[in-house]
Length: 385
Ligand code: PLP
Image 1 (tube, rainbow, N blue to C red):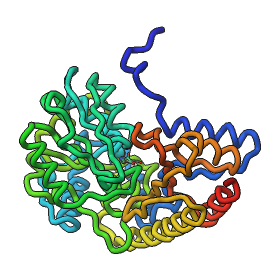
Image 2: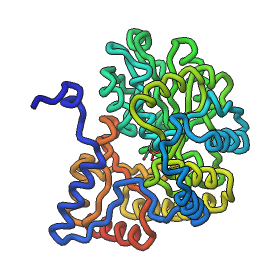
Image 3: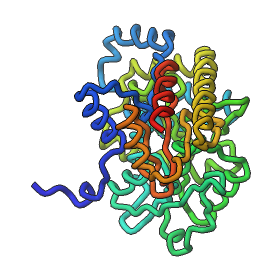
């Protein structure tokens, strides 16, 4: 059986590859510590779990959910955006629940691209922007994120022939994998660029609540005119340690949301209602659990930065998200250093180039690992050098 051309063009999914390597080493008896994946190890807060427990018992929730999510969940999302960002949303037309934000990000190119048209994709980036584009038979134009430009894309460097064919601009701040944040004037420029060129901004914001040193991350939709040109993807995954629950949303431009909704009604049948009720509790309940997680990640970030700098590895101290983007020591490529650390220390880190060619020269260290294991991993890396 011959696979479709678009599947042959798909690179293997990065984290599936990392999982495979870990399994191989563990089978060989190595006590592997993975700093490879951003997946919180702390449990989902108990008040959220409790709502699920109760909601599971109700047979009404055992039936197909609504394609567009529970009205009450859409209202909870709109109300959270109002409280948190001062952004007003119509829960009926400007909010659409997703089966995790990855699902919506992977499907949005199907809603907006035709063959011969382009997504503008940061490099390095979360891989789904470009792989979703491949699945929609679109083309990706990669925009390098370099340290000298604070890991922001330079939109003026995108050629006019590409701009003409571009339909989607993916952006993600606080950024995975670099940990960079977006200044207000950059977001203003993005809105203007998108408006002028008829491009839909798909702003990916799953780390907005995980911030350090007093930094408060914005919503893209706070930028004047943003709702006319774009949408924002968000998720309960990282904020409330709910990666396994598969629940997120997209908010903003009603036309873009309508187009994505059309794709989704033909592909999936919504999110288990009990999980949506738990999502309401997460958004409407006490946010102390989020503050607690920020403290934990901040402590781990400091430990990583301090240890790396002690062995001469330079890293940008991130103000948000759950990653440290560190420069590989001289003489190694990203892949060589990741392999060295796995072979000599039994520690998994992600090679920067796996997120795009401009990630070469970096590794990404995830902070989603218990403190004692993180300490041990860092000790082992130190010794391996
Ligand atoms: N976007 C970015 C930048 C991510 O790092 C992730 C997950 O790691 C996602 C989106 C997807 O998150 P989820 O599908 O769990 O909402």
